[in-house]
Length: 258
Ligand SMILES: Nc1nc2c(ncn2[C@@H]2O[C@H](COP(=O)(O)OP(=O)(O)O)[C@@H](O)[C@H]2O)c(=O)[nH]1
Ligand SMILES: [Mg+2]
Image (cartoon, rainbow, N blue to C red):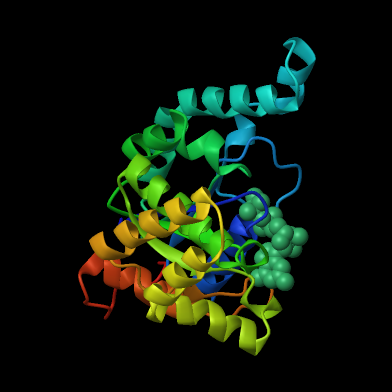
């Protein structure tokens, strides 16, 4: 086992699509892996999960039996799924793939900010660990929106205690000038802070100051551009994950599936 990759991001940021595309990529280059669906509320998946929490937890049964609304039912389902981690962990260890990719529930906070997230990190994430935080370009057009997403990514890093790679998902929908503008903010974070400060309101000043801290402390590298729809950036993504896991040695990180 080389490591576990947790795919995080706001609802609809492209987590499930990326798990499919990345899984297809790993299969095409012969790297052994398992895909784990940890979203009990998803109805259909574009990939065949090797492990699926829906085998342990039924959201429709929870909705039927408990007096909960849809959000309450999803929370209950994710919390319940977390009680099956030892079975999931055993299956992963039995199979012993090089990489395990975990698709997380639609809404980030239900996973990262409740107990399930840290439990998944501690109980089923074997080997090295990294999280991918998907920045949805449809939510990152304005400086304040990008700032909020970066803070959310940082806050997930804090919460789960994992190294995080920021990924700009759905890269295919960005026009060239939009992409350059977004990437420009990472090359010159001062420009992002300056734009935030130019706009009025206390929240903007707060965001600008928080961003200064985020950029100053860890430094935020430019995000990797990935398109699951067009299978772009997957080789680069895998290379970056290998670098994270193997400390810069990217040769022979994946073993051929026997
Ligand atoms: N254009 C484009 N759309 C995408 C891409 N990845 C995901 N989507 C769309 O974004 C929506 C949400 O994707 P999904 O993978 O379900 O997001 P999740 O909620 O984070 O798991 C779906 O309509 C996808 O078709 C991409 O790379 N390009
Ligand atoms: Mg999903």
